[in-house]
Image (cartoon, rainbow, N blue to C red; front, side):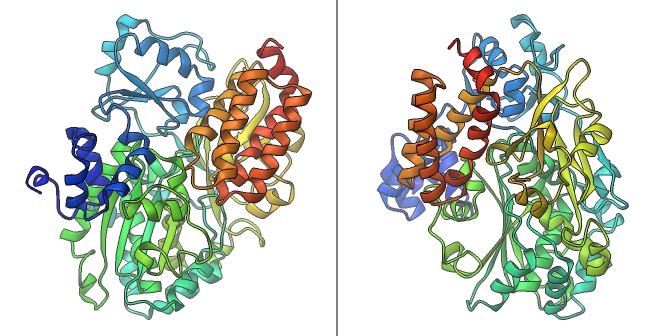
Length: 556
């Protein structure tokens, strides 16, 4: 263990592996590293191939090729930067409102300037060094169209990253009040509020908490899912960077309700600032007595830490995330059992999205009835919707559920960017939906959209302006599917590669479409997790709705 003595004994296996990769140990001393981690050598070798960050150059510039950045000219950015520096592509760095974006090896974000919404003009090679020394990007533009901002309130006030500022703005007040009563009171408030998960699945939060609260176990865990990876969505990044203490308060309230004693904030590696700020917030809360064995002088104790992902989209799926935290390959687990009954280390575990947890202190403070007064009877509450650079007013807008997509795009997003018209929008990222203008009257809500075959997902909205290169977009979608499939199940691992190779070889023809339909049907019916079941949806829609443009763009 001597050569690994500099590693923090309390760090997660992923953190050890990341450090070993940076030190060059992962490739040449796997046996010793496995001994340090108390893991089999085969496990360490398997993990190294599962996460992109562990088998790519840590000194490379990470250039975003998420949907928004791709449409803004990411390929041209990569071409220019790769003439001077080692580069690799990633699928989202969370700056979709200012695409294209990239991450330097020291984790600084660079926004590549452009003069056209589709990114046709960029700085010359000589200007790259000037871009490297540019100031960090400003926070995203945040607006609220709700009667009261529930999710974005502290963002609108300028943010509260420091605990002193956060407490002055009311952070932890709901926790202190809740600790004077029984845990069941918090659980009932969340159940009665109708709060549903904001990560994409929309599962009732109170039902998940109730299952965990009633599960037997000598230890329970609470995980905040900050692995926001849907290209087009960046609300979780903004919340983690500018309102971390509300996230921690939401975690504490959830832990109190279900009886959890340990919490983890899991954050993707493409969000370096969020990782740093959340770690600082945890240390601040510990110093203030808001984390530890006795919180606010009560018998309730809760510890929290931050774990950084290593480049795997599928780890946003809760069971793959559990594997990652345990130091295993980022692969989905069969369900049942569900994490609320058998999760991290085999113990009952709650996994909630960051935006979901931010709603909890408001609900506890104001009551379930007040929360249900927002939105509609079937869809209570609010949702933060993210707008990419292709709209006239990009940024984040908090709305009440029930607002029509048409009104949202026209009034709150300002329509397409100046000089452009919309062909369609991509809603909900790579597992979402392509929505055409004749569907814009659909209300923004989970069930209402589901009934119309539209997935809200995490609420990221990417404009598809007239003139979009749909052949390029199709290739990007298929590449994303093939690269990010975890390989756990055959329908997804082979199906994604088969689809990518077929389109690359023959394009979109009547015959290839028939084969693609068969492949996608098998993936949707037999894949282990939502990635394989849901990523074919927007790809199929793209081909159905823009097949002529795709064939033309591919020269068919």
